[in-house]
Image 1: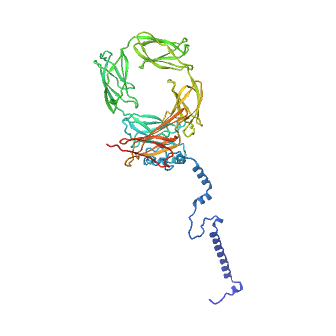
Image 2: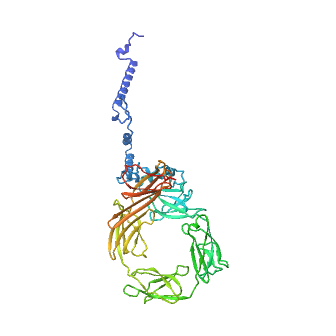
Image 3: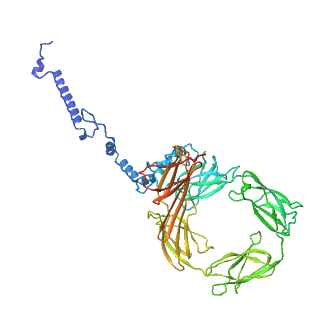
Length: 581
């Protein structure tokens, strides 16, 4: 009842009222704890935001830093590692064409090649992250043409490593796109062999290249036949019947008719050499004719070729003395004689008196004679001699070798050493001297214990062409030289547009550089073509600036000097004036 007070409550002995008091105390404690948590969340580590009129967003980076310190440290280490793009964009000497560190895949054509389902994609998607982080990963790109200069799409192209760093890499393959272009990405730096398989319509072709080349051009010669017709006569103009006519390397053999006429069908078998026909007869000297010229172009062609054979004559003896610069006899050296026809090459050794002799040499002919040198004497440069009807005495004089020692370092124009870089060295003062191949050590150094004295030429055998010349090695000298080669880590990007603002695909872009460093003059030349959107790129640059030449069909050519680092990271745009038809 409402107005009646519980007697037990007054006396403090009511059980129900005691439970109520306990429940109130518990509820009060819970409310107090909740208020403490709301006012000071940082003291207990609970991520509850304090009440405010304008709530602030959560700082997830601080939470990650607080909860995952190991992951942040790993991320910091990976971000500090240099990459090719990042290094280029931050380098004050880098190309002005940078718009972002990820610039190499910026153009639509390059994005097309980078798709996993693109025929030119040569690495799995799982390897992309590793390639982006590794500054040593490079590429090789180029275009496939036929002998007329038209692009060839759908040509299979393979790439195989050929030096100490790349030969262990698995082979790659791709097909040229609709512009004849192909590209191999994520390659270990070094030298490779690129081979284009011509299939049924073209001959295959291979080319040695160095990574970073974006301008490789492979011109495939078309397969077909050449029909050759003509007459075979002697020196007096009389017909030679039954002369044997055949093509070097195989093919059907034919013979001349009674009036000396013949007709031969020759198949093109070489991708870079013109076919060769041989004419032979027991009573005449063999004759070779190379089938070249505009009349041999095209899948099927014909040409007229009249041949005169020289009669075989009597033989004579050819002998002589080989001596040194002070008339001392030179024994044990090889003397050779050659008439540039099959079976005419002969060689012999000089005896203890320095005498050589050739028996039964066909008379009335021209021959090349030469001497292979030894440790003390340089080889004799080959020279032409005429052999008459009588025995010949030909004395030969050799010069002593003059060599020196060469040490040095391969560096680029920025002064950075080039470790593991391969070049060839040739002494231009000795025509018989074959180029020596050297590979720099881990510090860019090299050492040649003995090399022929004279003007030295340093050159690369793979594309792009890099050269350094002008150093003169004195006989007996031990010289040191820094050889400067244009090889670095910078890029140059650009786009070629017509005067109306449209992209110019297939334009040929050449980048040239040359500079004098003391007695040594260094130079380089690179070439590439623009893609379907008019973009082009040069990689592995180290020189401060380049002379760019741009040529495109239907446009006036352009020539300009471009300095790396200018342009504030913007792409280089080259505009060509369109020629009036």
